[in-house]
Amino acid sequence: MENKMTKTPFITADKLDQITAEFPTPFHLYDEKGIRETARAVNAAFSWNPGFKEFFAVKATPNPAILKILKEEGCGVDCATDTELVMSNKIGFDSTAISFTSNDTRAEEFVYARDINATINLDAYEDIFFLEEAAGLPETLSLRFNPGGVFSLGTDIMDHPEESKFGMTKEQLFKGYAYLKEKGVKSFGLHAFLASNTVTNEYYPTLAAQLFELAVEIKNELGVSLDFINLSGGVGVDYTPANKQNDIAVIGEGVHTKFDEILVPNDLGDISIYTELGRFMTAPHGLVVTKVLHIKDTYRRYVGVDASAVNLLRPAMYDAYHHITNMTNPNGDIQVVDVTGSLCENNDKFAKNRELPEARIGDTLVIHDTGAHGFSMGYNYNGRLRSAEILYQEDGTARMIRRAETMNDYFATLDGFDFEI
Ligand SMILES: *Cc1c(COP(=O)(O)O)cnc(C)c1O
Image (cartoon, helix red, strand yellow):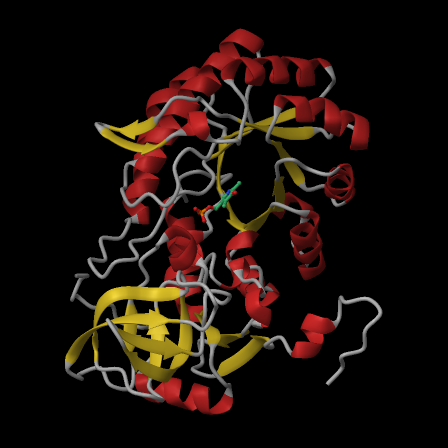
C-alpha cells in the first residue's frame, strides 16, 4: 500500500475548473511563478561564483515559452540535439548561453553547433577527431568525464558510472586536453554527470570535490587551467508526498566550501561553475490535468482517465511514483485503486494499489511533478495524440503554449495518402 500523505498542487480547484472549462483535458499545466522562484534560488545559491551559469537541460521541458522564462531569469540552455539547438537559437539565447552536450552525434549537428558558436561538450575521446574532421575545433571545448566504478555517498551507492555509455576515462581526458592544447584550443571545460535524480544535499558537493581535485591534477600535469567545471544535472526532486526536497542553498554552499578548499589554494579560483539542471528546475512546477472517464471493477478497481502513458511515460517506463490529487472530490472516502490510461499495454497505469479519495466519472485529477521529462517523453502509440501545454501565468491567467496534436498532425508524415479530416 502506498503513502497516505499529501502534496499540495500549485493551483486551487476553482482556478483549475476555470482552466478546464476553457481547455479540454488532458493537458500539461506549468506554474510560471514556481519556475521563476526555482531559477532565482539556483542563481542565488551559486552567486558566490561570479561566472556561474545554469544551462537548463532543454530535453526536460522543450517549450519556447518555458525557455524564455528561464532566459529572463538569466539561465542558459543545454541542448542534446540539433533540434534543441535550433529552438534555443531561434528564441534568442546568446551563443555563450547555449551548450551542446550530445553523444553519438551526427556530423551536421556539430557543424550547426559550431555555426551558432555553442559551447561544445564532447562525450567521447574519439569525438575530438570526429569534430575536428567534421567542423574544425573551436577555441572553447569541454570534455565529459566518466570515472567508472560506482558513485557512492558514504555507504550509499548512488549510481554505476562503469555501466554508463557517457563520458571518457581519466586517461582519455588527459590525452584529450593535451591534444587540444597542442591544437590551439584556448579555453577548457570539464563535465560529469554521475548520478541521476539524487535527493540529498551531498551529491553536488561530492561530485564537485572529485572534479576539483581532477582540475588540480590537470593543471599540474598538463599546464592546462580549466575555465569552467560543469556539474551537469542529477539534483533531483522527491516525487513522493514525504517531500524531503533538496535544499539548493545548502547544496550551493557545499560546493562553495569544496571550491575554497581545493581550487582556491591551487590558484584555480577563477573557474566558473556551470550546472545543467533539468528536473530540479521544472519537475515540481508541472501537473498533468486529466478527467475520469470510466470506473471499472474486476479484481481491482480501475479509474480510467483521459490521459495515458503517451502523455506521461515515467510511471510505465520506470515504475516511477507520481502523486495524484483528486481536485473535485478531495475529501471523498478513501479507496484503493489503479489509475489507468487507455493504451493496449498493461503498464499504462499512473498508480497501482493507490489510496485515493473516491474518484467519480467526470472528476478532475492532477498528476504531480510532471514539469520535467513529462510532455517531452511523449509518443504516439495506439495513435494517441500529444496533449496541449498550458502556462499558468504569474498574473493568474492561463495561456496555451502548445496546442494539442490533431489527427491531421499524426497523418501528416504519411506519404501517398490523404487522410485529412
Ligand atoms: C538529462 C541531462 C541533464 C539534466 O538532468 P536532470 O537530472 O534532469 O537535472 C543535464 N545534462 C545532461 C548532459 C543530460 O543528459
